[in-house]
Length: 316
Ligand code: BGC
Image 1 (cartoon, rainbow, N blue to C red):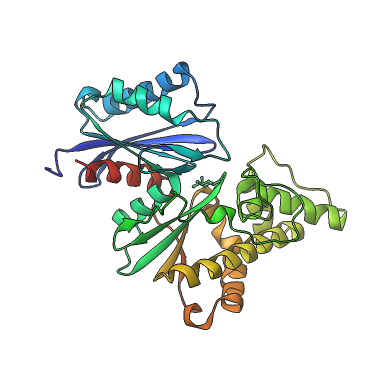
Image 2: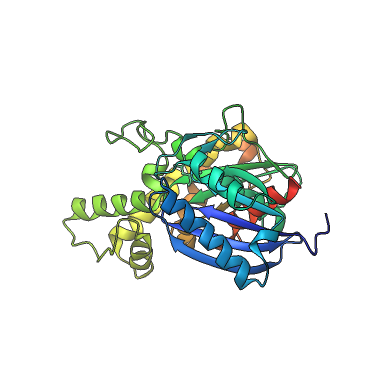
């Protein structure tokens, strides 16, 4: 493929928004867009995704009918044949969406993958995840996931669930059920909703009035409060850091990566939980892996669509 002229669209479906990017084979981003996510299980919703692809292509000055590839990533477990077997935080008819995309863009090669795996691929391609041995990129957002990249390839696993660290048990005492059906999952503490919950718990324990939280995933309000020195917010962010460290220590003895990269929308608050995470990781990780670096991702919210586009481009 001619990397300069090849064009792909990456569609990153998150729990709260759909981010799209028009990308060349060399990774140059020609146009981007973002819309909020609703239920993706009707012809009307699928048509909106196609409208988004058309608008994006137009914005980038190309005909959508000439796109070479489309990469679609979704917040759930996807098998190699594109079947979605689990999606705890979204209403999604993946088969319907991919059929619509195939019909609308028959000339384009379509790839479908997990969102955290896409973000990891994106970081490995153009960001901070390009390690020789392996990188585990953790995505903290509406949900929590990870992509395990070894030698430039994402390991999907026998059931598509490699890297599903959002559903790693980090709290055996938990009484509430995670959206996946289990209890004590990392996602219950390190997702946007999870952090807000930890914060509310801290406020309740202290009898303190919580700061204004605009919506169910407004983790930014807690990060801002922590930065301003709000005691309960500081403690909630520290608890998030501890839980994350516990999960990373378990992953370290399974994969032993060169580095952990922390991305996703919640990594915008890295400054508020990094210290607790790094310190606790050193306490609980096995000695051989104690010095494994844990660093923030560098592509921000673009990692997902870039990785999705990359996967589609690689299939050309
Ligand atoms: C899902 C993962 C996904 C992650 C991030 C988790 O709840 O199980 O498949 O990668 O959220 O969206």
